[in-house]
Length: 233
Ligand code: AMP
Image 1 (cartoon, rainbow, N blue to C red):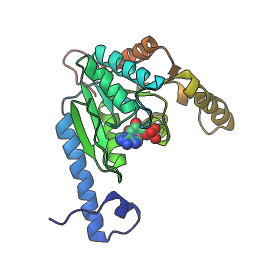
Image 2: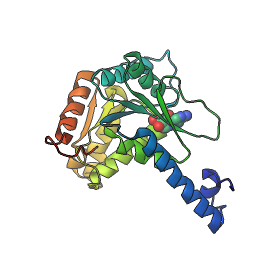
Image 3: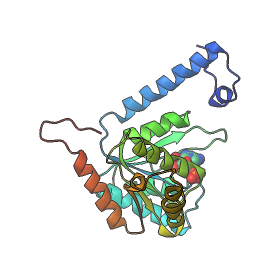
Image 4: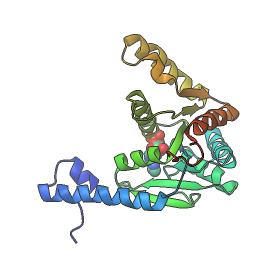
């Protein structure tokens, strides 16, 4: 079998038509592998956050607590499987014996998935992985982060805004970090008319992990089907 072209080769426009088809096949295989591995997983909560925060940082302790509280409430914790705050959330979930899942991304610089995920799903394609986060989650929680975290956060907000995703709370934990971002969304973007005020209805900014759980529970309950009904996610 010819090895399929890498993401970098494809994105740089260096693939022939045949190689591009190989690349499409690799996308399909990646989805299939994720579906097979995560089959039956319900009501996961994805926790995003910086890959760069060390275990001695206060945000790391916050990440452990977030993972622990979500797992104790009975929800599988899903992260990017990497270091920093992803590791913290997986660690918190694992510390109480909860499901702890890592959707790991293959990056040009070699990196092992963090050791606190009981299930690691490998991905080469960021966009496939982002779809899988949404597909197996009922809520997103974002800890402080950089471009990666913002990308995952805005992916969900765009899907909500365009009615592709319903009853899906997005909770930003850490008011000192996220407050100014939320304020910018609520003032500059709403005032400029580039988003509507109700686009932010499902966005919560908090330091209170009880509130985080209340918001998650309220939304999961609205997904719960009548007896004999179909579980939507
Ligand atoms: P950032 O906020 O830029 O540090 O990126 C963190 C987010 O992007 C995480 O929630 C991950 O899903 C993804 N990400 C970025 N870097 C990594 C990495 N080294 N390993 C796994 N996921 C990563």
